[in-house]
Image (cartoon, rainbow, N blue to C red; front, side):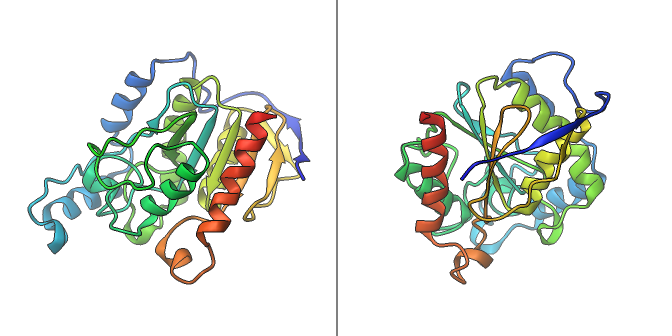
Length: 248
């Protein structure tokens, strides 16, 4: 069941983009971002120290932009690049090992026709998304996967800019509570305070006042997938819901 949520009108401020920029310029701005010194230092250090399995690889070690179909109607908002995944490969949800979060997510997207491959191993692997675009609440890998509230806030303009460059987006799937709250925080920064605030839950579906349908999904971290908290069937069902809503 889709819940419809109302909002309190407040003056617009903060991260609302003044104009829509081409997606290429948005990506360039993300890669060049230096707003969070702690995260930039951490990503560079990880890229120098490396993991033993990747000692012969050159790490990206910069902020990671989103990727996908420029005509996407579905946006997926994750948490942040993995230290030895997106921070290494330069593509979010990519390269975090066989059976990692990238493969888990892509399998669900592939089952529902949003991806041409069920895996995400390397930026040159031929993976293409159809009608979907993957972004993140935070664009730099955070220590222990725990960005601060300030770091999340610093990254909101990047999410806003990507959304502005993807005008067909009508459904957002948020992977985990941080991605879910980041999207709602972005709306608040643009003057759209949703009341009552939708509650994150796996499979939750809320129709927001801006016309976007927001869907909650557990994050495909190994902590969730290895314990059975999130199964392949559960994740595929979320994207089946998104596909059905887009079709409607």
